[in-house]
Image (cartoon, rainbow, N blue to C red; front, side, top):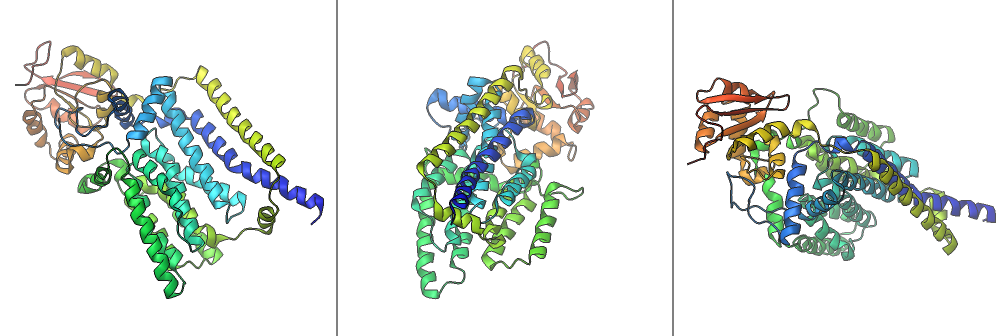
Length: 495
């Protein structure tokens, strides 16, 4: 090999090392610039509030203390570590803090995906897959715990896939990653569930004797991963808290992020599915049954719940990476040649420069831009009025629950659907959305409600307008307030 060619390989190797970081930096700066779009889910309010409670009390919640309909009911916060991170960042920088954390989560996810795909694909294809994954996930990129867990999910599944590709078992050194994931978000159960299908990828095509030994090692790793997921302050209750949301039945079809994919109009997800089919037909891909099973599983999840589309977007490329292509001769030469220490220093300096540029850009942008939450999630004026009247038991819209919690006002319902249960929340939706109007007065009387705070364009306020014993006292583009007819300047206290 000539000296000039060797130098060319070394230069390209250093450049390839920096590409994932550059992709991550680009994603970070983009989502920092559009940071206000990350602040449009009222769940962010109560996530921060719980994180602050954990910091103040140096303990984790085991019961509810934010609602007046479920006070003292058992409830675990399986995203406690993310909530603490959001609370600390919010205390330090206001809404810029959660925006920065969310943007960093997306950046790390893109960078890790590019780095993992680089083992099998050419760099331009790896970058393209990362960009497509971000586009598919745009609807669910919000300042919430799942975004801090996303890079951990990609790293975990990438580690499993790499072990399966080499027909080995995952290293137990990666088990702390599962403990971290279990503290960040309840989605860690997906990481546990994928161990089985991944093991069959590793087993496929081996001799029967080797299959038994390898299967045993994967089984032991799965048991260890299950134990690692319980290495949180909640212990084994972590698993219970994470699976409670899956027992909500019909309610999952009502909550937007848990609803099934809708193909009434063309979406990026629909385009991705068609593109995946076209790619398989064009390249003539032949996949092993376990890989097909994995792709079908991730596709079924995305079709069942739109919140699972990001798992489809980021994980399917990892499953397809090896079948799509092997390392190019240039990549092999780069691996064989290796870098000398001076070259590594240059790479490190380049990485530091990228990080410094990202931080400087953040500081400059934050100095003249104030991040604000989406107005239709924050009924400020209506809530001010209710506080002035002294309302104690407010029948609030589902999406206003987080904001009321942030203002230390007990709520009727909020985004913690697993706390309230399927029947309670379904009755609430049916009453306020006009499906069963007769339920509304029954709920108001049962819970001794003295004021309502509902979404302006929902059927609920119109029903209340014609409901005897209630009168509308406030309306704006965001919310409508009703009180009982016999209420004086201060709302009547519940008996």
